[in-house]
Length: 373
Image (cartoon, rainbow, N blue to C red; front, top):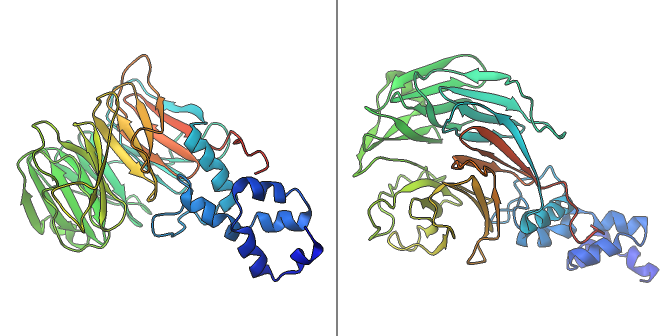
């Protein structure tokens, strides 16, 4: 490589390097300090990262993990793809529970019966502080699910109540929302939606919950296990996706990838992808759980990867949407069987809660085959 190459304007040099693959960039970075500097720049790695699993780039190209170098995310992505990780049990407890989990930055929230506990995450091997720095109360029975907004934790419980916990103080509001268990809640743009065992879903305004009056009630034919609010708040109610499902093939979890792309999973062992711009009667893609287990939970990276939690032996599966079959699987509860009740991941770690334990999969610890990266 001649010296004139390094005399090119920086933007031209970065453009040329952006067409190289990861192996070539890794080798180029070993030539000299200046090339190492340029070969590590985020602009060079973005094209590669957009094709990788869970690299922090969503379908539209938006970077949702901008605080982490793109090259490092590409390296860790190879570990997700190849199933290389270290497994840790972060916490254990004696009672069989049905916990729910959320991760907000460096804080992990999960339910313990009628409590929601907040633990600080940290980088060293133990993963999190064992003692919670905050405990949110307000239900007389177990918390079923909860969501986190900028200012509140909103939870639904087996006592039929919704609780609003202020994240910045000890203040909370509880009110009776349904006649039976509140199985699920979601909140977006000041609107709360709750679903219940009593075969109804209700719409609430976050600003007027003190009045304890709902805005709208939706009658359903069966208990409601999961709800999701469209990120655009378009006002359109999707109350029937698909047709001719057999009895007992209910949905247990749903999530939006974009305002028009929705994922669902449930008792019939399938993950389904729905494009609301085309048809509400047929999904655009589906992936079948290979061991005929119900799927309790899913999460997407907003691009090519889906993680699912199964109903037996704590099995977590990683799926590449460009493939028809499962990419990787991990069993967390052998020999005692437990569902994965909830899982959450970021670009480096996956957290999952089972009946008696909280697990972490750390994908940062193994170097991939391109050691020059």
